[in-house]
Amino acid sequence: MKEGDSRIRRFYLFRALTSFALWMPFWTLWAYEKLDSVFLITVVDAAFWTTMIGFQIPAGLISDKYGRRAALLLGEVLFSVGVLTFGLSTEFWQYIASNFIWALGVCFIVSGDTPFMYDTLLELKRANEFTVVMFNATVVMYVTNAVACAIGGLLVQQTGRLDLPLIIAPSIAIMGSMTVFALKEPKVDRSSIGSYRSHLKEGLKHVRNSRAIIILILFLIVIEVGVYVMMIFRSIYMYEDLDLDYLTIGLLICSFLIVGAVIIRFTRKIEEILGEKGSLLFLYAAVFVSFVVVFVVRAPVAIVTQYPIYVVAGIQGPIIFGYINQRVDSEHRSTIVSIATFMFTAVLVAVEVLAGFLASAWGLIESLFVLTLATAPIAVILLLLWSREIDREKKARLDASWERTALD
Picture 1 (tube, rainbow, N blue to C red):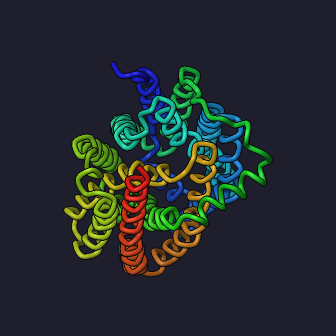
Picture 2: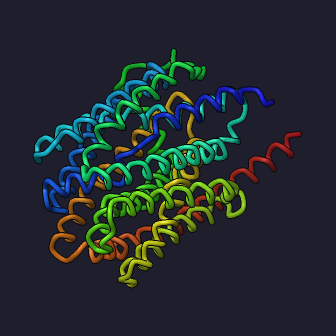
C-alpha cells in the first residue's frame, strides 16, 4: 500500500457522504413552480453568484490562513442550511436570502476542497497523481449523486412535492460533513502568510505574471459558463420542452451521472493521451457539439447530448486546476483558486441573467444556441494562445536543460 492511501480514501468518503444531492434534478423546477419565470430563476441564481463574487476571495484567504479542514467544515454547514432554506422558500426574496447562505457555503468548500487534496499529495510526494485522484473523487461524487437523483425522482413522483428533496438532503449532508474530522490537515508553512491584503496582492501578482494561468482561468470560465447554464435550464428543458415526468427526469439525470462516472473512470488518462493542448480542445469540442445538437434536433433523442456535458463537467476541474496547481505554490493555492472562481462568477452573473432574459423572450433552446455562437470565437482564440504557451514553456525547459548540461 502506498504511503498516504488511507488519507486519500478518507477524502473519497468525505466526498461521498456530502454529495447525496436529492435536490439536484428539482431545485430549478421548485423555483420555477413558485416564480413561473425562467428569467426570475436566473436572477435568483445571480444572487448566489453575486455572493460568490463578494466572498470567494476572503474564503480563500481564510483557507490559506487557517487550514483546509476548517474551510470544508464551515462550507458544508452553510451549504446545508442554504439548501434547507431554499426548500422552505416560496417567495422571490426568500429564494434570494437562501441563495446567499448557500453561496457562502460553496465559497468555503471551493477554497478547501481542491487545495486540500493537492497539498496532501504534495506532502506525500505524489503531486503527479493529482489528476487521477480528483478523477476518482469525481467518480465517487457522481455515483453518490446518481443514487440520490433516482431516489429524489421517486420521492417527488410519489408525493408531487418538489420541495421535499431540498428539505431532506441537508440533514444527510450535515452528518456526512462530520467526516471532515477524519481528514488530516496537510502541512503547509503558513508562517510567511501576512495580512489578508498583502496575501491577496501576492496571489494577484502570481496570476498577473503568468500567461499560462491567465489563459487557463479564462478558458475555465468559457467551459464552466456553458456547462452551468445548461445545468440551470436542463430540468426545465426536460419538463417543459420534452414533457417528461419527475421520475423520468430523476432517472435520466441518474443515468447521465452513471455514464459520466464510467467514462471518467475509464478515461482518467485522457490528459496523458491528449496532452495539455489536446485536452482543452476536447473539453470545448464536447460542449460545443452538445449545444448545437440541442438546437438542431428538436426531439427527445436530443437528451443524449447531456451525457458528454456531464463528462466535461466531471473532468474539466481536475484537468484545468491540475495545470494551474502545477504553476503555483502551496501557500497561495487557495487564493488563486478563489481568484479564478471570482472571475468566473463575475462573468456568469451577466451571462446567466442575459440567457434567462433571452430564454423568456425567444425560447430556452434559442438562448443556449446564442450562448454557443457568442463563446465560440473566444474559445478558439484561447486554444491558440494555450498552444503557443505550451510550446514556449517546452522551449524554456529545453533551454534550461541545455544550460545545465553545459555547466556540468
